Image 1 (cartoon, rainbow, N blue to C red):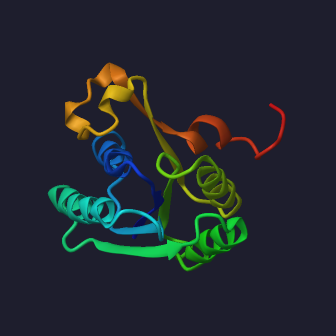
Image 2: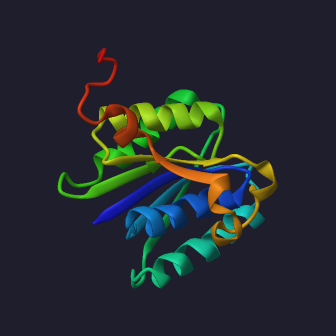
Length: 166
């Protein structure tokens, strides 16, 4: 099974567009999506993502994608670290896992990347926008030269050990 783990931040399309780009550009279509959400997050943003993501995955052939959210305390760094580690440890060794570091606060992205790499995830995706005008636009409406999907693990960590000099 293919998994996708991410935080939900204040920009719903940061979440939606990275999954969309992974499906279209990389052929990585997750079947099970798990989101960590800040308890203070607007329900409207959660609802937007909850409507778009399952519909998007169905368009890419996933029948009844698994979708779950778990609330976290945004300022409890240790809890975030432990929750991420717990979620990743529940996934089987033969499953493929992508971590999305695009949405959420910087420290959340840092924690998810660190724990993900330590626990051997397959992908660490980041969607770079070179023009903030498109921050709340659906992926197909963003000009190709204004965004780039980067698999940080593939770009910087495959064939080397984390922290090892090249």
